[in-house]
Image (cartoon, one colour):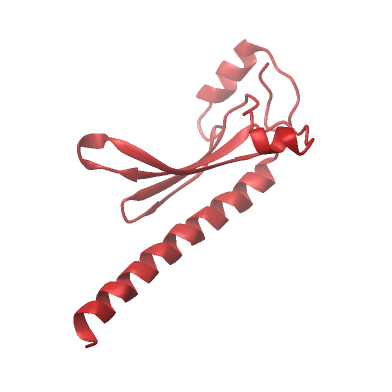
Length: 118
């Protein structure tokens, strides 16, 4: 069963209309070098095993994916998180973006030290 951004049940037809509405589905998209972090409203409950095991029955209708862009348009998924609300998704997107920016910075520092500090 699909849901709108507020978590209210909607029909498949309403879901398709919202999905095609400009600016509704994509919450944020950020590029960090060759990594793309994309947060979207899926409108469908994303089953999360940890969420289920912990007894949390929240609908997870937003998702953030981080993937590495490889040559010729192929991608490699690096991380994935699911959220119940748009607010959680926005915060999660920022956290994941910060995480991948920090990794990129650490790699630059390591390369610099390797090349210039003996």
